[in-house]
Length: 363
Image (tube, rainbow, N blue to C red; front, side):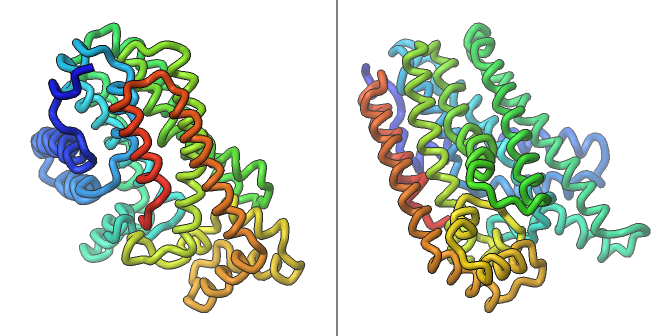
């Protein structure tokens, strides 16, 4: 396979390629909304701010799912088109983030005010009638819906052979359904105050593991016409890595540095997240510790002392250490699956790098 026929594709070059597509689409949609009304400008301002950063993991797994199994003529002919399709997943991710922040009542995202807070403040400062929080939530829901529509446009309009897009579309449809189902299950477990480890891992699988890694890999592989054997190998790799990715996110949601994560310290505790780590803590905590965690989970005015208390319980019960063990097990399983996968050596190397990028991170 002649990789030199393609441009170099390290992580920086890849992110720059995705950003070019994102910027072009946002410019086009800015014009489209401006034609409807100048009052729509704040919607695009919010999208552009949100999409100026991010790890671009979902597009990366889609792209390398394709490149790792594609035949050489397709590599040369369709490289830019696959980048275009993969960029559509960044709009899907923006939809998920905007809606997730509404459901969690989050104040910030990537160090900036969450979209619903932006529109709430706009309403408040303009002294409009009605309730500013309700306006902010409504505007953010609609903005997320726009991002979902644009994701479909970008992915399905990529200049690829129609048969390639037809192979990928059922996976794309399933991916969106699994994401929304996982989001609802996450919301449900918070409402039920559930501490079941099995239920927490189900949420991880559908809200994160499949959506972030397995299905993007399958999308790219379907675009390349990959074999069932390759698809199965990507499932083994993607589900193991996807769980490790989410568990790392759970650790950062409590123990992460706000300067790195862009979220307040202990934000997952404030939002009442029933994570795998929290479930492990309940399983080994004393009755007094369980009562304290129940009091802290979902506490809207959580302060630094509360965060320190939650961290102490998660550490002393062994939940943090157990979560780190699960992360390492997921990483090991992902490497095992990758080592046996029928992919190019270039693809194997890139997907190995993505294991590290997904799990050895501070944001």
